[in-house]
Amino acid sequence: MTAFKTLRPSTLSREQFIATFGDIYEHSPWVAQQAFDQGPLSDEIETLHERLSEVLLHADQAAQLALINAHPDLAGKAAIQGELTAASTSEQAGAGIHLCTPAEFARFTELNEAYKARFRFPFIMAVKGSDRHQILAAFEQRIQHSAEVEFACALAEINKIALFRLHAL
Image (cartoon, rainbow, N blue to C red; front, side, top):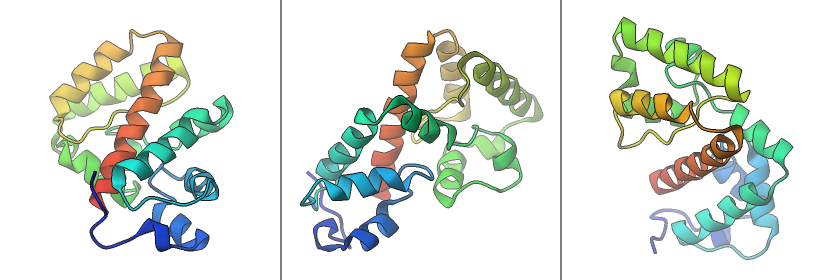
């Protein structure tokens, strides 16, 4: 288990906890709110992540879908126009998405549009440790999934993103 280096969730008030962890799940502070409301918190990253993950996985499908839809497209308009959250900007830059050739940006755009037309939500991938070529390959593979499989995959990827973000704290 890994403890946070500079903060102790167990000592935070509800307001402090939500302010600190409210954007671990993209624009969805309700995850942090519900995790806090479940009782005493751990100062271990993995234990806190497990609680946050369970909140997401036990939420109703409408709340889950809203959280999925809060995520930006990979290499999408928001990224190009500099409108991503700081965490999303860092994650996409770390994967080299900002280095895409015009043809690669065009392929991302094409896949983003096809994916959203098929599933009605954006493609979600925890891109840390991946490069743009691996992301495009995953995109092309996952677009073949059923809606149920891809919805579950999106939630799993969101939980991976949350763990990366917790470790970054």
